[in-house]
Length: 91
Image (cartoon, rainbow, N blue to C red; front, side, top):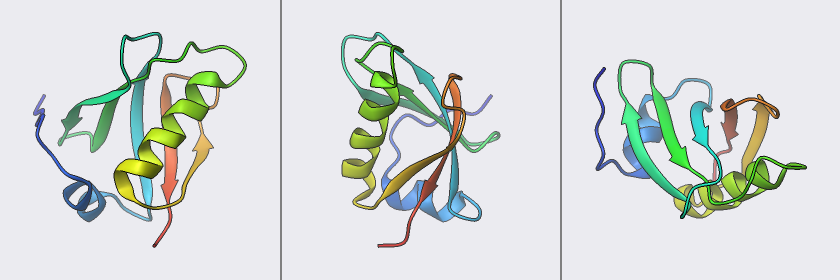
C-alpha cells in the first residue's frame, strides 16, 4: 500500500475522477485531521474527533473537508459506513 502523508488539496483533486473522493474515516479520535493518502486505492484517510452518533462524525468530516478543499463537499454514499464517497464540487 502506497501512503503519502504530505499531500495537498490540489494533488488530491487532480487524481479523483468525476469529482468523487473515497474517504476512510476513523471516528472518536483526539483531533480531526488527514492521516494519509492511499495512492493505489485513491483514498483519503481521515481521523474525525466526533463520535459516529446521529451523523455527528459525518457533519464534522464535511465541515473539515470543505475548509481543506475550499469547495462545497457533499456525502454521496456511506452515511453509516466508515468508507464514504464524497462529491467535491467545482469552486
